[in-house]
Image 1 (cartoon, one colour):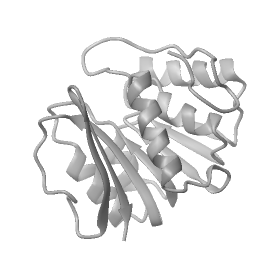
Image 2 (cartoon, one colour):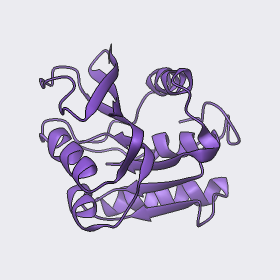
Image 3 (tube, helix red, strand yellow):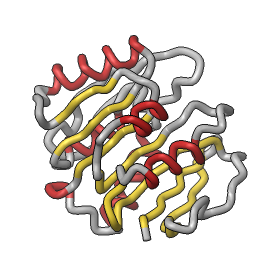
Image 4 (tube, one colour):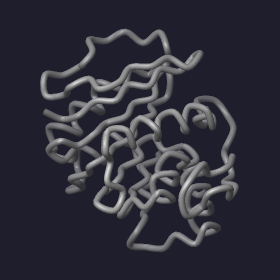
Length: 186
């Protein structure tokens, strides 16, 4: 998979395969980042959390575009190792990035993390993790005031949109089997 824009543009990152892994396609990433730029994201002032990170492609794309720093949260040891390897191959160093190999809900529930201006949530399909993740993200103060949340979920997932009163819907787009929702914190 190639990085689309920024400092690492054109560079390859490795992805993992297996049940539950579905790296964001180039088309989806390009569309998502175009949405974010049209919303005025100031990359140099943006702290990013990539939750259920998989290969880390969304957080890495944000770092490539100049995000201040990024935290990658991934439970699977193989995927967390892959993220570290991708970051190392690109030359991204601490403190600009960190990888938390842990359960996302546990991390949000116990961590003094944040606040983040941009959070990517890409939970495994069919596990009903979107709403609990959003709840902890907001209740624990991990999302900055006016922060943006981008969720990549299965196209058929049903929920009120916005799923919480403290979120304002900015975008809701379908890309085949994938649905991208973008919200801003009220």
